[in-house]
Image 1 (cartoon, rainbow over the protein chains, first blue to last red):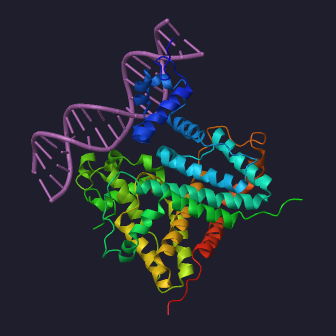
Image 2: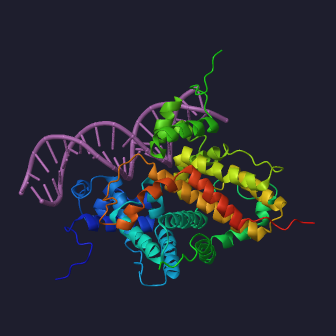
Image 3: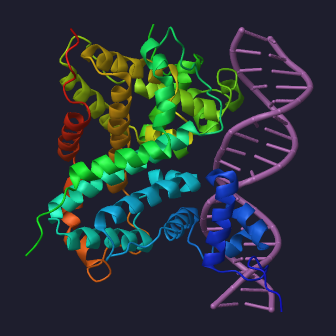
Length: 210
Length: 210
DNA sequence: ACCTGAACACCGTTCAAGT
DNA sequence: ACCTGAACACCGTTCAAGT
């Protein structure tokens, strides 16, 4: 009667990807190996290859699955607020799943979910009255800033102590003087503030069509 | 008499890092292994550990070494043009050395060269008359955008064919309609255009001190 | 101070074979 | 259709030992 989700013997692509994401969230992407995954799922390493082509494809599937957590855009909501929610959602997703960031540097985010989620945004901008060129230019600035800001925040919250010579008052006096401002700059409120300003600058109210 | 740079028998930290960077540029960061490196340098894998703590530290050193290629800022040059050159230089460095991008997602860029190069920028902004808060806020937007734009461009130029379902006219009609704009958006000229506009918005001429 | 050899505990993946 | 076993060619790193 009982059937817990990680039921041994039940094996399919979704279960594999889900287990891989759990390991990645807990111990980092490096801890995800076909052998470790098989152990966790009560199967043989080779059993996984029946459902997944290879490890690269597994990572692609992991990234795509992660993106499903993004809340859908409300096409009838106020577009400016929806935009803000959207990019904040991406930022939070990257912070929650650092493996997503790592995966992104290897391979483009072009899975079905990435496409679906992107389409929602461009539909919103389209309906709001933006010209295609403005919509894409605005998106690129917002998206690239969001990715960069997420990586920056991740790197500052990384649990590793600096291995190389750090920030000293005499080697870099000006930077040292500003050191607390950098800490503030990696906060979520700073991100939202800058995001809002970027939206206002790059996607100002379009001429109302008709 | 002859003494080619990768001379077998000559081994030190710099030579190891340099060899590692060559492999990374040619075949990607994944191809860099202690064993492969040792083979290339005519040494035993364990010999490397005399100069380098472990592989993580090697990657840190690689990132730091890469940053040395950034041209120094001219403190007496026009600050706006210097700013532009600086961030374009970072962008180009990431494109030329994708391993740098990959390394950045693992560990913060806090080596001595990163600090040195950062200090140059903040000194420039300081001398130009910017308040610390404005300098940091401006830097963060420009830097994060630059990192994001570099990753975006790298992901679009990656030599792998998409493994997952791609962009089809019926699944994502609006995105599909815009597809050529995305290609343009990943060009260097687009980057520079957006960078200029961001500089103008976030670091406008400061009140001249005295 | 600098380097080696052998060993441990891992990887991803192929291939032929089993049910 | 789904899974296993054995094998291949790799990893990073420790440890004791050599010069």
